[in-house]
Image (cartoon, rainbow, N blue to C red; front, side, top):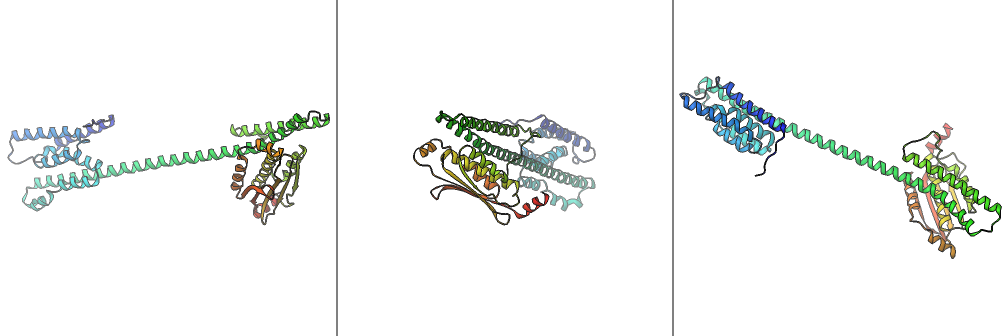
Length: 393
């Protein structure tokens, strides 16, 4: 049989109940009769049996039901087993299933109908002691049921608290993952655009070593400016990761910054045409920033995968409808196609753009169209937010 391990608290509880059973028998022995005509030998045997019953309380955790049955049956013949019997039925009610508790309770109250039928014929002291016995048994069972219900309630509350804690941890981890994904998209969009400019100008200097000094100086200036901007953007991202914002944080780009973005691309020799943005009140910051990032990533992809081709950027819409962004460039051919294929990435930029558009409440599609490659997106432009923003301005 597997050995039962008890904690210090379990031992304290068991010894306390053993002391209760012994004290109950000692205190009540003078007020409750133990039998008519019983001699000193019978009284001594009764006391020894009561002592054994009190000692048996120490095994109540392992053999609660057998101990309760034996004490209930033997307790009808001796008063000194009343204390251990109360402890045994309390243990059954507090630790065993409902059906087992009901069976032990039925055994405990089985003599009650006969006792009530014969109560008028019994002496007053024996009738009173009998009623007291059944009342004590009922109280022990009731207290055991209450303790079990309380333990079940505590266990349920503890389980709910653990589930709530686990759910909160999952939500926190999900929030951290979303923040990391947002930072990764920002790094890809911002640094990818800057580094692609560096790559284009560095490649031009490498393959055109006999270029005029003025052109070399201009290219070197663009490289220096792009490297400076890339370092500044990288410092901002690292500042976010370190949770150390500064007062000199640069404002986020908006839709009105698109002409500047296109000018940077044209300054590197790119053939970029911008149609729009519409002369309407500025859209909400989230919409404007998302549109800017979409155009920025589309220009970066065109510069990487279709160098030298003409890129057309169209931005249309108004608050009554929605904001539409379309970036189209012809597919490269010949050597350009081979160079573009060699420099292709893993497509993470387009995946990030789709996620950006979805988070802003819009949609984005990208793929071959009209003999080239087209990125098309639409974003919501709530008229109420625009109107309120214009009113604040």
